[in-house]
Length: 222
Image (tube, rainbow, N blue to C red):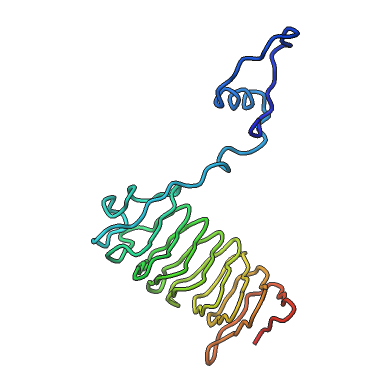
Protein backbone atom coordinates (compact mmCIF):
# COMPACT_ATOMS: atom_id res chain seq x y z
CA UNK A 1 0.00 0.00 0.00
CA UNK A 2 1.47 3.30 -1.10
CA UNK A 3 4.80 1.69 -1.92
CA UNK A 4 5.16 -0.03 1.46
CA UNK A 5 5.04 -3.80 1.95
CA UNK A 6 3.10 -4.75 5.06
CA UNK A 7 4.98 -7.43 7.00
CA UNK A 8 2.76 -9.38 9.34
CA UNK A 9 4.11 -10.45 12.70
CA UNK A 10 2.03 -13.57 12.50
CA UNK A 11 -0.90 -15.06 10.64
CA UNK A 12 -4.36 -13.80 11.54
CA UNK A 13 -6.85 -16.43 12.52
CA UNK A 14 -8.99 -17.68 9.64
CA UNK A 15 -12.03 -15.47 9.12
CA UNK A 16 -10.66 -12.65 11.30
CA UNK A 17 -10.66 -9.17 9.76
CA UNK A 18 -7.35 -7.32 9.86
CA UNK A 19 -7.57 -4.07 11.85
CA UNK A 20 -7.62 -0.83 9.85
CA UNK A 21 -4.31 0.97 10.20
CA UNK A 22 -3.44 4.64 9.86
CA UNK A 23 -1.04 5.53 7.03
CA UNK A 24 1.74 6.33 9.49
CA UNK A 25 1.46 2.84 10.98
CA UNK A 26 1.87 1.28 7.55
CA UNK A 27 4.88 3.49 6.88
CA UNK A 28 6.42 2.66 10.23
CA UNK A 29 5.93 -1.05 9.64
CA UNK A 30 7.55 -0.79 6.23
CA UNK A 31 10.50 1.17 7.56
CA UNK A 32 11.12 -1.33 10.36
CA UNK A 33 10.97 -4.17 7.87
CA UNK A 34 13.32 -2.38 5.46
CA UNK A 35 10.70 -2.59 2.74
CA UNK A 36 9.85 1.00 1.79
CA UNK A 37 9.75 0.98 -2.01
CA UNK A 38 9.44 4.73 -2.76
CA UNK A 39 11.46 7.45 -0.98
CA UNK A 40 9.09 9.53 1.12
CA UNK A 41 10.72 12.77 -0.12
CA UNK A 42 9.60 11.95 -3.66
CA UNK A 43 5.93 12.27 -2.60
CA UNK A 44 6.03 15.91 -1.57
CA UNK A 45 6.67 19.07 -3.55
CA UNK A 46 8.74 21.73 -1.78
CA UNK A 47 6.81 24.40 0.15
CA UNK A 48 6.43 27.69 -1.70
CA UNK A 49 7.30 31.18 -0.57
CA UNK A 50 6.55 34.14 -2.86
CA UNK A 51 8.36 37.47 -3.02
CA UNK A 52 6.10 40.27 -1.78
CA UNK A 53 8.56 42.85 -0.49
CA UNK A 54 9.14 46.50 -1.16
CA UNK A 55 12.62 46.31 0.34
CA UNK A 56 15.48 44.69 -1.54
CA UNK A 57 17.04 42.29 1.01
CA UNK A 58 16.50 38.66 -0.04
CA UNK A 59 17.16 37.52 3.54
CA UNK A 60 14.42 39.63 5.15
CA UNK A 61 11.57 37.25 6.13
CA UNK A 62 8.91 39.95 5.78
CA UNK A 63 9.73 40.22 2.07
CA UNK A 64 8.30 36.73 1.54
CA UNK A 65 4.83 35.23 1.90
CA UNK A 66 6.11 32.21 3.84
CA UNK A 67 9.43 33.41 5.26
CA UNK A 68 12.88 33.54 3.70
CA UNK A 69 13.43 30.51 1.45
CA UNK A 70 16.07 27.94 2.35
CA UNK A 71 17.27 24.75 0.66
CA UNK A 72 13.86 23.08 1.14
CA UNK A 73 11.74 25.84 -0.45
CA UNK A 74 10.59 26.91 -3.89
CA UNK A 75 11.20 30.66 -4.15
CA UNK A 76 8.75 32.33 -6.54
CA UNK A 77 9.30 35.78 -8.05
CA UNK A 78 6.04 36.59 -9.83
CA UNK A 79 5.97 40.34 -10.07
CA UNK A 80 6.16 41.56 -6.49
CA UNK A 81 7.53 45.03 -5.84
CA UNK A 82 11.19 45.77 -5.31
CA UNK A 83 14.36 44.10 -6.52
CA UNK A 84 15.30 41.00 -4.53
CA UNK A 85 19.02 41.32 -3.87
CA UNK A 86 21.50 38.92 -2.31
CA UNK A 87 23.24 40.74 0.51
CA UNK A 88 26.20 39.44 2.47
CA UNK A 89 26.09 35.76 1.52
CA UNK A 90 25.13 33.34 -1.23
CA UNK A 91 21.85 31.43 -0.91
CA UNK A 92 20.47 27.95 -1.58
CA UNK A 93 16.89 27.04 -2.47
CA UNK A 94 15.27 23.89 -3.79
CA UNK A 95 13.66 25.68 -6.77
CA UNK A 96 13.73 29.21 -8.18
CA UNK A 97 10.77 30.20 -10.35
CA UNK A 98 10.61 33.59 -12.07
CA UNK A 99 7.30 34.06 -13.89
CA UNK A 100 6.22 37.62 -13.12
CA UNK A 101 6.73 40.79 -15.13
CA UNK A 102 9.07 43.35 -13.64
CA UNK A 103 11.15 41.22 -11.30
CA UNK A 104 14.93 41.64 -11.32
CA UNK A 105 16.97 39.29 -9.18
CA UNK A 106 20.29 40.93 -8.31
CA UNK A 107 22.98 38.44 -7.33
CA UNK A 108 25.60 41.19 -6.92
CA UNK A 109 28.88 39.20 -6.71
CA UNK A 110 27.28 36.19 -5.00
CA UNK A 111 25.65 32.95 -6.15
CA UNK A 112 22.32 31.17 -5.94
CA UNK A 113 22.24 27.37 -5.79
CA UNK A 114 19.08 25.46 -6.76
CA UNK A 115 18.08 22.00 -7.86
CA UNK A 116 15.77 23.61 -10.43
CA UNK A 117 15.55 27.06 -12.02
CA UNK A 118 12.55 28.09 -14.15
CA UNK A 119 12.85 31.45 -15.92
CA UNK A 120 10.06 32.67 -18.21
CA UNK A 121 9.92 36.39 -17.38
CA UNK A 122 12.23 38.79 -15.59
CA UNK A 123 15.93 39.45 -15.28
CA UNK A 124 18.81 37.89 -13.37
CA UNK A 125 21.71 40.27 -13.04
CA UNK A 126 25.04 40.42 -11.26
CA UNK A 127 28.67 41.37 -11.60
CA UNK A 128 31.81 39.32 -12.21
CA UNK A 129 31.93 36.43 -9.76
CA UNK A 130 28.16 35.99 -9.55
CA UNK A 131 26.58 32.75 -10.59
CA UNK A 132 23.79 30.20 -10.71
CA UNK A 133 24.64 26.68 -9.55
CA UNK A 134 21.86 24.47 -10.86
CA UNK A 135 20.83 20.90 -11.34
CA UNK A 136 18.44 21.67 -14.19
CA UNK A 137 17.37 24.98 -15.66
CA UNK A 138 14.57 25.87 -18.07
CA UNK A 139 14.62 29.29 -19.76
CA UNK A 140 11.77 30.24 -22.09
CA UNK A 141 12.04 34.02 -21.71
CA UNK A 142 13.57 36.77 -19.63
CA UNK A 143 17.24 37.68 -19.58
CA UNK A 144 20.39 36.72 -17.70
CA UNK A 145 23.32 39.14 -17.60
CA UNK A 146 26.44 37.79 -19.29
CA UNK A 147 28.43 38.34 -16.07
CA UNK A 148 26.32 35.68 -14.34
CA UNK A 149 27.94 32.27 -14.78
CA UNK A 150 25.80 29.12 -14.95
CA UNK A 151 27.23 25.86 -13.56
CA UNK A 152 24.98 22.89 -14.27
CA UNK A 153 25.16 19.22 -13.36
CA UNK A 154 22.00 18.41 -15.29
CA UNK A 155 20.54 20.08 -18.37
CA UNK A 156 20.01 23.72 -19.28
CA UNK A 157 17.00 23.83 -21.64
CA UNK A 158 16.70 27.01 -23.71
CA UNK A 159 13.71 27.92 -25.87
CA UNK A 160 13.74 30.98 -28.11
CA UNK A 161 16.25 33.00 -26.06
CA UNK A 162 19.71 34.55 -26.28
CA UNK A 163 22.26 33.80 -23.57
CA UNK A 164 25.68 35.34 -23.08
CA UNK A 165 26.54 33.64 -19.79
CA UNK A 166 29.30 31.03 -19.61
CA UNK A 167 27.78 27.60 -19.00
CA UNK A 168 30.14 25.28 -17.16
CA UNK A 169 30.45 21.99 -15.21
CA UNK A 170 29.33 18.48 -16.17
CA UNK A 171 25.84 19.15 -17.50
CA UNK A 172 24.55 19.69 -21.03
CA UNK A 173 22.39 22.04 -23.07
CA UNK A 174 19.17 21.40 -25.01
CA UNK A 175 17.79 24.04 -27.36
CA UNK A 176 14.43 24.61 -29.06
CA UNK A 177 13.52 27.34 -31.53
CA UNK A 178 15.88 30.24 -32.32
CA UNK A 179 18.57 30.23 -29.62
CA UNK A 180 21.83 32.19 -29.52
CA UNK A 181 24.78 31.27 -27.28
CA UNK A 182 27.50 33.92 -27.13
CA UNK A 183 29.44 32.84 -24.04
CA UNK A 184 32.73 30.95 -24.08
CA UNK A 185 31.10 27.82 -22.73
CA UNK A 186 33.01 24.99 -21.06
CA UNK A 187 30.30 22.49 -20.07
CA UNK A 188 31.21 18.88 -20.79
CA UNK A 189 27.77 17.37 -21.37
CA UNK A 190 25.87 16.84 -24.62
CA UNK A 191 24.47 19.68 -26.70
CA UNK A 192 21.10 18.65 -28.14
CA UNK A 193 19.46 20.84 -30.80
CA UNK A 194 15.91 19.53 -30.63
CA UNK A 195 14.30 22.01 -33.00
CA UNK A 196 15.02 25.31 -34.72
CA UNK A 197 18.44 26.92 -35.05
CA UNK A 198 21.20 27.20 -32.50
CA UNK A 199 23.38 30.19 -33.35
CA UNK A 200 26.85 30.30 -31.87
CA UNK A 201 28.03 33.84 -31.31
CA UNK A 202 26.24 37.13 -31.75
CA UNK A 203 28.40 39.09 -34.12
CA UNK A 204 31.50 37.26 -32.88
CA UNK A 205 32.62 35.02 -30.04
CA UNK A 206 30.75 32.18 -28.43
CA UNK A 207 31.39 28.45 -28.31
CA UNK A 208 29.80 25.13 -27.47
CA UNK A 209 30.99 22.94 -24.64
CA UNK A 210 33.31 20.00 -25.14
CA UNK A 211 30.69 17.23 -25.27
CA UNK A 212 28.89 15.55 -28.16
CA UNK A 213 26.48 17.49 -30.37
CA UNK A 214 23.16 15.90 -31.37
CA UNK A 215 21.12 17.65 -34.07
CA UNK A 216 17.55 16.48 -34.57
CA UNK A 217 16.05 16.18 -38.04
CA UNK A 218 15.15 19.63 -39.34
CA UNK A 219 17.22 21.47 -36.72
CA UNK A 220 20.39 23.41 -37.56
CA UNK A 221 23.61 24.61 -35.98
CA UNK A 222 24.90 27.93 -37.24
